[in-house]
Image (tube, rainbow, N blue to C red; front, side, top):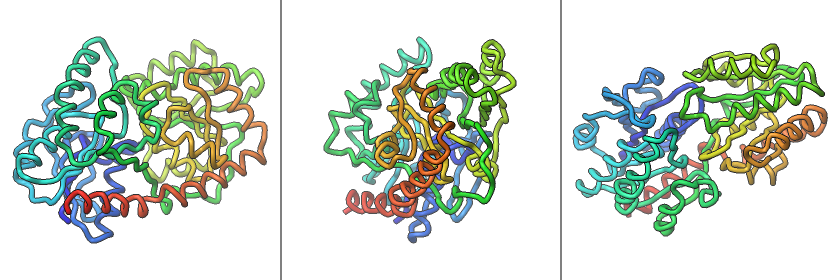
Length: 375
């Protein structure tokens, strides 16, 4: 098959839709299919034509609610030769044009919805509401299949679940994956009482709950004075979080390390005592959780992440209620104070990833979806 994928951006250092598209495309090519990617020429993601993936980057004029607006996108889609287009949300524009034009050209389309739609300001709330009940609704009516990575989307997607429920006959649950050959245990020691957090530090990722984690660290410091929080990621809110650390008097316990490449990330996952994802809203799945689990690192996450049921059933970490600082503190302290349990959680996490979330298996399921749509 000739497959056209249209994420808003392609391949960045930290998790997310971009890496999902990269690893899926890599596996699709291994299975004998051809893949072309059309995306924005975003300065944070500059990998081109890797592993046989053709990448066409388009100049973007500006952003609306974290979506690059690329005016030449429709022309590039019309010029492309493909059997099926696979587009991605929650960032509009690319997904809507991909679906509309595929319908016009008599081609099939699939959309993967990775997350709920964000509403970060008063203006974005208005824009989002109008979009959801007009363009998004039309896109869902035209697309052939809808893949959602969060099994609990009806509970977790507070802004879009009502609309998505109208199209349940098109919806297929299929989780994210992780490359277990890259993200794996290394022969290096864990650093004592070290908590790891990985995210982009901008306003569009405030839902990751870093402020709650910083407040939790202040409380944990009373019982574990040498607690260390390692924060990997960059963004305009980095200064704000640094200032909050000073206000909470935990600056000596918190290290902001900026962006790290993939190899460095694997090392930090392996050195951490625990990986934390304290998301407070709109979390779709949490690919970083899979990366940490693949490195045998125990997890603490909130009950809205798409992996929460798997973590609980496999006993690979602890799940707490969102915005519940006390529960977050108790979970972190419990794992740090119980080394044997922490080690068992790590072993369980690696087994969970290998059994359910390896990219090879997931890509084969995606191909089956494509074939079902085309036939």
